[in-house]
Image (tube, rainbow, N blue to C red):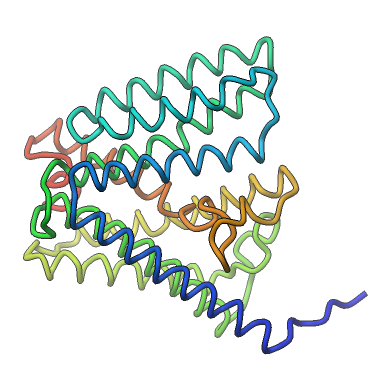
Length: 287
């Protein structure tokens, strides 16, 4: 039995909703990023809580009824303190996730809560740690580092959508996401690298071969994160993670690639900071 394609009016309306939602989200994110300090930390904490809430809605219900509320409160506090103590925030999150994983002996589904704490917490902590404590500026390396990651992921997502629709071709991972194509993945990766390098160049940061590779890695990781979220939704038999964002579904549907890219970005930044010093953001950008 064939499936009729969506009516042109419906497709246009869906695209308009996606664009409008993306613009609103971008304005809010960039505004909080410019403000920095507690404003950006608060936004990151709210996003982390919303991600965890959607994660629990998909993977629950849980026998420990108080656990979800306690975890959301824990996550909000842990993310908010990440600007000053990122390693401690990551450590606390890892300990809680490990404790939940042990608790699966009595409640198997709690293992999903363990993964959810890391999925929601690590990227939010990474964003706050990269931004740093500076306020009311885009000039700091921390702000540039977050903009760099955002630019790579957003450009990848946008270019993959349009190049995939225009070029088509072999499917990338039809088992998890039947609409994604190799042409979209390649087009997205190219756009992500270009966008990241443009941000770095505009900030006066030298664009060498290593930074190009970092941008490419983040673009690929972002696309893998997108596929991973699609795989989870398929596992639980849901189309969208939620209904919060018109045209996109839930928060997880909008930030799936960003979640993975931020996590990898902070690992790179922390690794370079530990080896050579200079700060997390500098470790990500300056080679």
